[in-house]
Length: 441
Image (cartoon, rainbow, N blue to C red; front, side, top):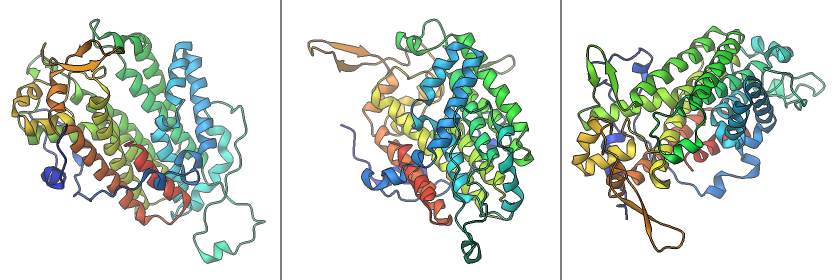
């Protein structure tokens, strides 16, 4: 049984506020150096039934837009190759897989009409056809008008034509974000070698198709991005692609260079945490943070207004929480998805309790035999046991690493909820609050 987690176990890690310092001699991009570590805010655990109801279901609030987005992207991928259509249906079958595009749409709904530049942006509502990837098969219902921002506006007669709650550019941004995310997933599914385990091979697609499919989506996303007509958003989303590449390099089990040879992992626990948080920001949180900010920019928020910063902070904290929960889940459900590479939070917490892990983390679990130990699972008739091997799993299972990772994830969801207090009360804001719980369940 894993040890019970107390706040003191994680206090030294969560309250760190110093700048991230890269380990070794590898330079990082200027964008990567902007990662900040805020102080811990105690998490508040609410009953699931209080957080999630039909009226506050975040996906129900944007269901027409998500359905439209899903059908467009499935059609787009299918036009490239029938095999990609099947992959797309898998990714888009569950709305919870569309967390990134949902964040874009929800933040757009929550902030449209608040920015001083809203009046300059709402005219784009007449350009819906320009921003569609394909002609929709069904007509979207007319969205309601934004909530009144002043008593004068609320007194205007209902006969006046009101702007849509979501602009076509914002819906298009959600499509772009989803294309970038699915492209990343396709590239992640490239089999590392012919010796990959049977489960991994069964769930993988052909390497060449994965590479070309991901490249196809990135190309389409880049083209669509240039049509948004907002240079700040173009810069934000373009930087996401470079962030994801840099994050993937950090996650690799080994990096070989002609002059420096094989680059090793961090040698200290603090250095390992720095690299880990940098990696999850670059690979996961960057897309959520910058796309949420981009949605608010498209809604007319200007540099002197707080709405862009609120969106970025929410997306960043949500993305970190989501990745922490994913990393904990890998050790909870089994070993089929564990791969050599950068040590994740459960392993780093286990390192604090089992110093022997240092040598494995130092070489990123890349040496034959590093992923070997025994964990038993009873088979169907309970007469024999099958063994799955993974030394990292063995160390983690004998530590409080998983529980402490869950506690850390909840602290970041609380940070995401905290920044939402600045937004006006609305059902969309409540939906964003509910989303913070869904990403870690």
